[in-house]
Image (cartoon, rainbow, N blue to C red; front, top):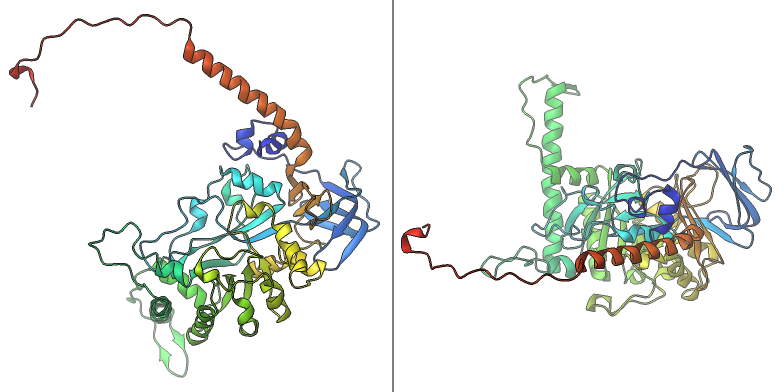
Length: 479
């Protein structure tokens, strides 16, 4: 039933709307006006009885007295309702079930999540129904250095290549602690040596060794480029037409991009000791840690995180699911934010990604965040952490029209997301979803009835007995 609204938007088969095919939502009108709403901008406060004008997928105007220019504009009356930016999930594994971990090596910086996203996952539509428009889809945490992430918008029904945000900075997944050190014997026979590392010390050394190799690789390419084109310094290096390029290594290419500031590091972690280890390692090796993911003991080292300009993407009140989470507290997000850390709430779960707006609300309950500070933990702060805040994350003129209309305040347990837009196109409409649920129910009942009729097929015919056949002689058997 969760794909019913997508059916309504495409005007086609509901399965196609979920991504099983090529159905695409119709192009949005030139202008759309959402009027009479309470607008939570996430950047410049709340606008009561305000309007948002959307033109060509962008926010054209925001304010209390906004009018559409196009007489054929789509008008959405949001009287008594709330509008927020589209929710951004900074830690997702949606659509990559079975492909999340390449656990055979400790360093798999060459693999790419974007190549294995499954557009048929029903979780995608369900997350749109929960107001989530954008996600940082990450490799798993079996590796000290894992695979390359993908920052996507859930444009259900369109080709996956169109989901990728083109100007989002490239990223990669690191992992610290129990996950990489205990993932060293998955599927390996007991007679085969365990994969290194097996301790936190080994995790640190694995990362260090990988970057030392990346530096050497970077230098080899720089020397090759110098020989290939020639360079004039205090000593003239002549052009060498016979220079041979180093052997290309896709894993080291990704690590060199980190060293050059072209690829963001998103590191799975829990404990304060491993957090400090990675921050110190980044100082030693000359790379930046963009975000610490989960970071349940971040409140203990928030000062150091802020000094490194490293964000924290955390849970609200998840703990006790393993020993590493023993010291987790619900005040973690607020305490990190109070020390100057850019904080977001993430899901790490297809289910939790449907209600991240309620996870944000817990920042007010635990730690006294203001309403806007709490909202930013699933909108603007998430966009900052992913380097896409110039495009999305708040309701400001010029940004993508990624918006959610809620029936009540988004922090109320009684609220329901009624409409979710990405770049001005409606990807979830609760009113249409409710209409289509009955259609789908009748369709299902009809299919079951037809299947039963085909299976019975009238009265059974008596089984015909075959006469006994003589046993084959030895020379009749094929060898």
